[in-house]
Every structure is written in structure tokens, then in C-alpha cells.
Image (cartoon, rainbow, N blue to C red; front, side, top):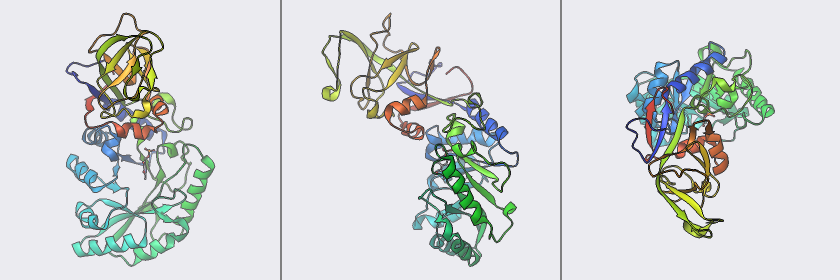
Length: 381
Ligand SMILES: Cc1ncc(COP(=O)(O)O)c(C=O)c1O
């Protein structure tokens, strides 16, 4: 369904009311003292940084996490004074700007500690930092058995203040035993901390992690991305399906409808051939809008609340679907929905991801700049 003014070819509707309710539902399911770090990297998972962050700031977020300094400075423009974690490793030439911006870098090695300490001293500031421990993700963080080396380096770095310690789970959505092991390794690292744990932010849980959040223990913050956008990576656990609402829907239009005879090949490479005389519709969105070519001959689209198959290869600006089953025929200009509700039918981002061979995070991040984001609060999607 299009709201007045949505005369568009490809667009994503983002329900900021649902975003806010998701945040509140997550908070309500967790211990009250927990700090909520909203993960808003990659343009808030494709939902649009400024509108998402503005809403989360007005809701119950405590801090934000981004991937790089560009995202951090755009976030600063939206609201001053919020703690911003930069989750990715920073490059040597970015360290002066990180110190100037006053972001919270997440450090993974004694070398990084030394480099940040030298720059903070040069700028005459005390920079709060978080230290990251690799408990089994095999990506950022110092390997857990070597964590004491980081602490020794911090003792030699008076221009840095230890503000938090964190780790990241690799399989919280699929392997509870490994997640438990990661938690134990992390907790083991905290014993020799030079400051009281209560003075630090201690965080490990992403969206899937919160579903197994332990009672008690020193964890006092979570880093939530996907779940706030209405997708549960690990069904079961703390939150019920009804607690979390989808935030984004994705639509395009029918640009052309036509009849073609049986045997006609469809789109580049002739990967599909009509089995019978058919009616096809050409949609006004393609891979330049965020529909990956892996949806070719696999995806589904809702038109008038009915599922229609993507046929042939998805092309840059157009995608072809079979609308033979729709009667009367749909017309040029009608809406086609890739993600969202139409009447009583719904295609979820997980349906889309299964068909395209992506993960849900990737589907959101692949929505291109050409796909306009349309913001609303609780009008029909
Ligand atoms: C270090 C870190 N923490 C938290 C998150 C949030 O994860 P999710 O979107 O599954 O909540 C991410 C996302 O990629 C991440 O890289």
C-alpha cells in the first residue's frame, strides 16, 4: 500500500513507532540496570542513520555503536554528548580524529593501546576506551589468554581510562554451548581487573545473545542491532514473537504488464522459459535498488496480496514476475511488495534472505541509496 505522496519506483517504509516499541520490549525483558547500546552501523542497518538514531535517543537507548568515524561524526551531528563505541579496528591515520571526536574506541592489541595512548597524551586529553577480548569469534579482540598483556599496557597509559571490556559471540543464534564457553572465557578474564567491575561497562550480548542472557553476573550492557529492527535471530528465549515488530517493508511498482506465448525466454541469459502462455509484469526495481541477482528464478513478490514468482534474471533496474494467476490483471503503477504485508499475506525479511541466500543483516544493508526511505509512525504498511 502506498501512502499519499509515495509516487516512487522503489522504496522502503520504516516504522519508527515499531522501532521504539522494540527497544522498550527488549529493555523490559532484560534486567533493569542494563545499559542499551543501539548498534546503528551501516546507516542503521540500511534503515537510515539520522531518523533511527533520533528516535532511539528519544526512547531508552543509553549509547550507540558504529563501525567507523564517518558514522560516528554523522551521529554526533544528530545529538551531542552520547557515548559512541566504534566497533571496527581504526587505522593508524584515523587515531587523531578518533581522539578529537571523543569516541570510545574498542581496542584489540597492546599496539593499539600504545598508539591511542600516545595520541591522547599529545592532544592533552584522557580518552576512555573499551578493551575487546577474543573468546572464540576469531575476529577482533585480543585472544583471551593474552588479555593480561593488554592490562599491563593500560597501566603504562595514563592518557587512557579503562571504561569497558567486551567480547563478541560467534554463534549465539545456533550454538548455546559455545556461547556459554565464550561467556566463561570472558568472565575468567575479568578477575584480575585493576578497577571495580561496577565502574566498567561489561558487554558481550548481541541480538541473539540476549535470548540467553544469564541471571546475575557482571554483564551490565548489551549491543543490539537486528532485534531492534524487528528480526529475531534466535527464536525462543526471553522475547515472544509478539514482542517484536518488523520495522521495514520494501516495495516497488509494476512498470509494464504484457502477455507472452509459451516458450518465450525471460531476461538475460534465457535462464527461464515460459511453460505456457503467460502474463508477466516488469517491476521498477532491480539489483541497483537492493534486489540481488540470487533472487533470479527464486524470489517471491506480493501483488494484490498474492505471491508471484520472480522469473528470469534480476536486472539492474527491473525484475520480471509471473502474474498469470491474478485475475483481473494487475495494472501499471500497482505496488509490488518484496518485504511486508499485503492484505493477509506477508513476506518477511527472512523469507527474502532464504530465497536470496543472504542473511537478514545483509538484505537490509543491501538496500541501495536509490531505494528511498519513507518514515512513518504506525500508519498502515
Ligand atoms: C561487535 C558487534 N556487536 C554487536 C553487533 C550487533 O549484532 P546484532 O545485529 O546481531 O544484534 C554487531 C553486529 O554485527 C557487532 O559486530
